[in-house]
Length: 124
Image (cartoon, rainbow, N blue to C red):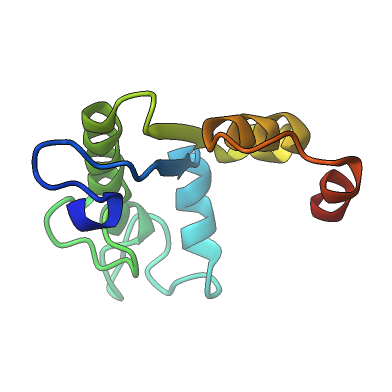
C-alpha cells in the first residue's frame, strides 16, 4: 500500500488518503440484510453461526470484505501514520446529513479550488 501513496518507506510520499467510516451497528444491519435474511439469523442456529457471530469474528470473518473491526483498526493506523495533512476521515452519516459541508471538507483537504455553483449542483 505504501506505493499507492508514493512512499519510499521513509514517509516521503505525497499521496493522500480519504477514509469513509460508517457506524458499525448500521453496517452490521446492512450486512445482515444485504442478500435477504440469512437462514442462521442474528445469533445462529443449525444453519450457521449467525450474522452477529460472523461479524465479530476477527480471525476468520467470512464477510465479503473481511472483518470491519480489523479494517477500522488498520485504517486508524494508516491515518495516524500519515497525519492530518495526508489523511482525512469522513463519516458516512455526516456525509448523508450534510453533503455540501463534507464535500467542501474533501475539496479543501485535496487543495482544490472551491466548487463552482454548477459543479456543486451537479453532485448534489
